[in-house]
Length: 222
Image (cartoon, rainbow, N blue to C red; front, side, top):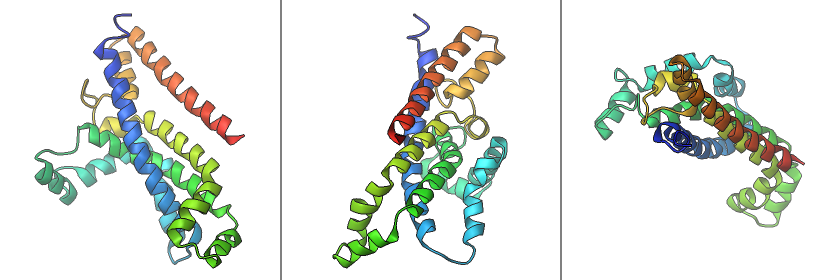
């Protein structure tokens, strides 16, 4: 019980939940708006752009982490700009874990949103436009409610993916206890140190969180 209530056990859980929540909100917003655009617009290079957006789903997490280090590292323009603005680099901070989770979880939300919007009959939206609805009202009052089941499922699965992110997070944010250590990286460190009791506790914790997320999706899908 002492171990269960200790900071050593709880810190990675709280950090994982915080990272999953922030990255989940970002992914949901980006996925909905980019998915809507890609579902409705046709333009040259669309297939190429969509392939690029989906690439993190099939790339090894270590490759994703490598590119994040290249893009946000001290030798990059973006990395130097961030360090100038915030007086510290973003690499090896918990914000790096948020960025890594956004990148790997985005394809799930994007694909769900795009499929949801493609499944909506455009005649319904056109009828609303004829009745005087502007694009904002149309989107919020008709399009989103019609796509809500798939959007909710995509949102939960994206957050679950962010919660379980390991490889890119380990490379880009590191595994610093109390600072950047999430549940997956904590499990890795506990096993490496031979602390199987603590590893099992984190495994059970993330399994329970993932189970209830998937159960929520299954219930909502009915």
